[in-house]
Length: 245
Image (cartoon, rainbow, N blue to C red; front, side, top):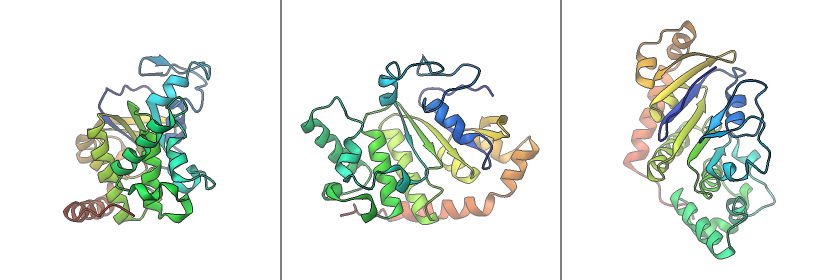
C-alpha cells in the first residue's frame, strides 16, 4: 500500500478485523518495523531506526489504543499515568500538565489520585487521551478508540477528539471498522482489505459513491449505525456533561 497524510489532515483508515489496520498503525507509531518498503513520519524514516533515534519521535507521535483498561496500568494513579511520558520534565511542570490535560478531556483535577478501575470505560478512554496529549504531539493516532464504548459514550468521545484535534492543531489518523464513525470524524478515508488499500479519497465521496465492491459492502452495512451515532452526537452536543468529579 502507498499513501500520504498531509499535516493537519483527519485521515481515517477503515476495514474489517484482520485487514491490517492495527499493524499499519503500529508501524506508523514505530511500535513495529516494516518488513519491506519505506515509512516516513514527520520527515523521519521509521524503518530500521534505533530506539535512541526514535526517542524524540515518540513524543511527537502518540497513540490511543482500543481498550482503555488494557492500556492503563492498574497499579498506577491517574496523575502518574498521564505524567509517565514526561520523563524530561520537572515535577512542577508535569503536575501542571496533568491538571491541564484532565481539564481538556472534561475530568476534574480531583480524580488524579484515583486508580483506573474506579472509572467507567468512557472516563478511562478520556484518561488515555489525556496521557497521549501530555507530550504535546503533532500527530495523534487512534486505533479503534471508541469501539469498546457504548453508543452514547462513543458520541461524547468522538466529539471530544474532534474538539481537541482542532484546539491542538493535530494531524489525526483514526482507525475503525465503522465507516459511520470515520465519516463523522475524518475528511479523508482509506479502505483496507487483505492488507491493501482498495479505495482512498474524500470521506463524503467514498461514502456516497463507493467504487470498490468491498467499500460498497461496508457502506451498505453502515447506515443504521451511522444514523444512531449522529443522533447521539446531536443530543450530547445539546447537553454537554459536566466535568466528572
